[in-house]
Image 1 (tube, one colour):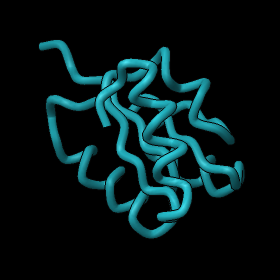
Image 2 (cartoon, rainbow, N blue to C red; image 1 turned 135 degrees about the vertical axis):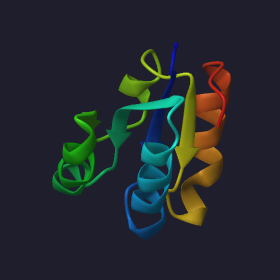
Image 3 (cartoon, rainbow, N blue to C red; image 1 turned 120 degrees about the vertical axis):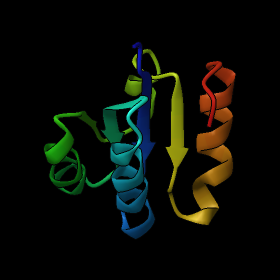
Image 4 (spheres, rainbow, N blue to C red; image 1 turned 90 degrees about the vertical axis):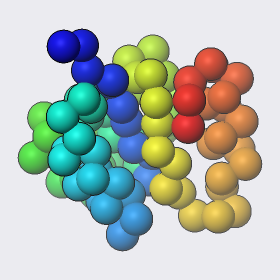
Length: 89
């Protein structure tokens, strides 16, 4: 079975919740995590062996879907970039 490659952008409280829920979905594979706080991203990605980035752009060629869990004031900018890349979010 081919799994849906997913990523999470923003790994504060809600982003870590998204990661935990993706991990429960057998059809999903968590492949990348992005957060402006690289240490926070590394800590969140470690249990899933996901790649880590401090910006969302590098993960776009690795995922088919992304959860956006950044602060509200950044949602538009991040969502626009992800959608322009043809990635579901």
